[in-house]
Image 1 (tube, rainbow, N blue to C red):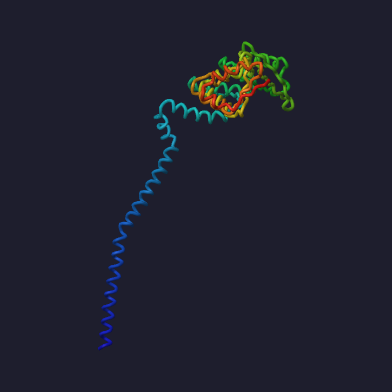
Image 2 (cartoon, rainbow, N blue to C red):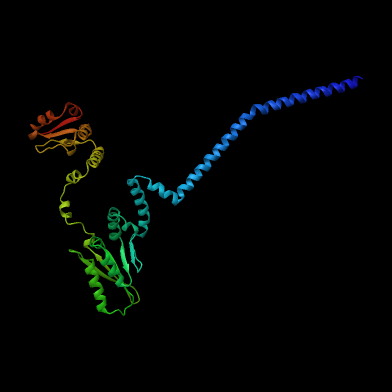
Length: 315
């Protein structure tokens, strides 16, 4: 009986322990369930965000959807974007113009006047025009506007074989040089053998790469005059850069002394420059010009006068 009672007690205790364990596990699941839901919701949102960004990236790569976006920009931004795209393609065709039957100018030269003027100078001045046969070259040069034709520096004309009559060769050179020549142009012609019976006639216009007529007058300008011709913000940058690299100096006072140009301009630049100019500087004057020194010192503001390091007199 005692043994049987012990078995019953063990069964009751096991049932109680099982119920208690089930209750604990259920409570844990019940408590942690909102956390699992939050984690699942966070994962779902992260996935939607990642897919949304990928979809957006694919839309940006789609030219059909990109074009309306660009057209929705202000006109100034549209022009900037378009010019960058055109320039990327334009740089690949520089240095050589091969004139064929199906030749067409690049798209940069077929658009509005502003872009055409911007690209034409770079296109015609840097490229070597090559044509075979010569008739295409002749038609090409005649079709160019006069101001574009004047930009062409080099033309290569190839005679396919040595049987071409000398007179025809002479006409090729004469007519092409006449087409390249502007009102005041000087052309030089070179003949170079590039194979058996084949020659490369290169005509280079010397005047096309020369400076403009007023270059002589421009060379007469002093550095200060060149700087003063720049916009004001560029002038300020140049002046600030030059004075910031000057070491401690000696200022020699003579009857012809003039303060530097930076101290003769607007108030802001004069104020910034004066501190650097006078700080740590020595004033030097010769004995026979010592009468100038009091006038010079009296002309300095007290703040600038206190920056001087010393005065030197040469007897």
